[in-house]
Amino acid sequence: MLSLSKISTNGKFMFLAYDHGLEHGPSDFNDINIDPNYILDIADKAKFNAVILQKGIAEKYYVPFRKKVSLIIKLNGKTSFVEDEPYSAPLCTVDEAIKLKACAVGYTVYVGSKFESLMFKEFGNVVREAHNKNIPVIAWMYPRGKAVKGKEDSPKVLAYAARAGLELGADILKMHYAGSVQDMRLVVESAGRAKVVISGGLKTNEREFLKDIKDAIKAGCSGVAVGRNVWQAKEPLGLSKEICRIISEW
Image 1 (cartoon, helix red, strand yellow):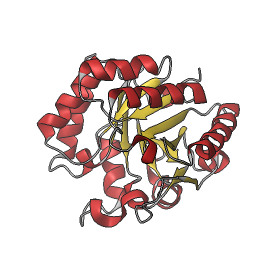
Image 2 (cartoon, helix red, strand yellow; image 1 turned 90 degrees about the horizontal axis):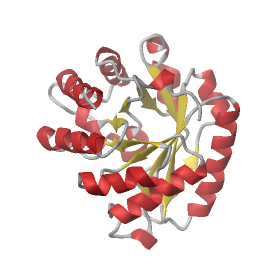
Image 3 (cartoon, rainbow, N blue to C red; image 1 turned 60 degrees about the horizontal axis):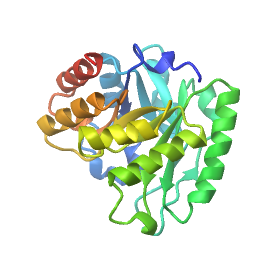
Image 4 (cartoon, helix red, strand yellow; image 1 turned 180 degrees about the horizontal axis):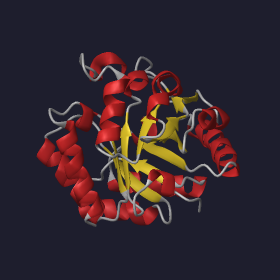
């Protein structure tokens, strides 16, 4: 496996995600967090291992933060306008990400979509190119589409998605929380030697959010890739400190 030291602390991961503008539009933002500098400042001050950005944000905002926080470039994406079977198209290459000083790249695969085989092929190319350049690959392994409708967060479906990510060559898998320690343990076991980080998801109660993180770490997850629950919070730095404490204690 590739070294993950540039995006981890003692084998644990704490990523701040900010790829929401493309995926969800402006609905996630207010007058403060619509500014990428606000998010990058949180990532720096709260000592996140890395920040996750699309290439356009990275090109225009990341340079002053290069020596402060590592960068993960999301290589594909889509908008929320199209409600057909989900497909996330390639938008950036591995070489472009490296030129932007990325230490890792991310890619979404919608397991269960009718476009699954196309995304597998494109993701395979990403893994090949990234590993040839000694760049780790993080897979957003999200069950979506008619084949899994109503079962997207089923532990067995999530475990299947995690196994697919391992077998496709991902180094880290970004997964939804499966709902309990026991169910999340199945997901982690299915991921094998690929590391698992849980996504933050929709903004929720902070106590519930922190409990989910604690239970995920207890189940064997290696960290988090969170966004809205941090930068939409009233006290993002305080909340980030608590997340760091939970991760580092296990």
